Length: 103
Image (cartoon, rainbow, N blue to C red; front, top):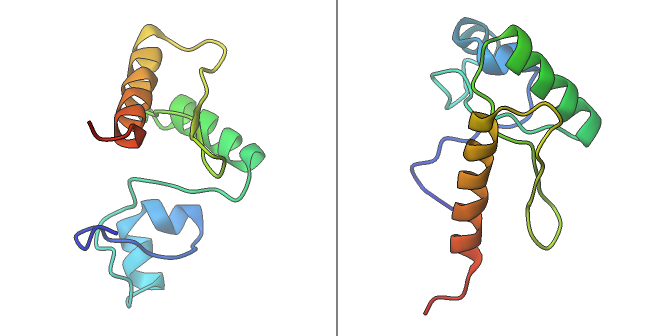
């Protein structure tokens, strides 16, 4: 684990991405800025959120990446732009490099 990584537990999505709500609702939280990574309980909820963030929020989204198997799975979505594909290939390449045996 990275000792510089700030991690917090389960919370509502609006609280996680709104610093004012976060400080009011969770004054004891170590997070002082909105979350930059969101983790979801299942694929359906993650997919809905992913699509909404990319379409309504103007967010630069990279993914989805499915975890929990022997290796991560990087999924190219239907309608992905060239930049979406380049971003996901970059993440997949870094994952592959980190998982390869050191030579």
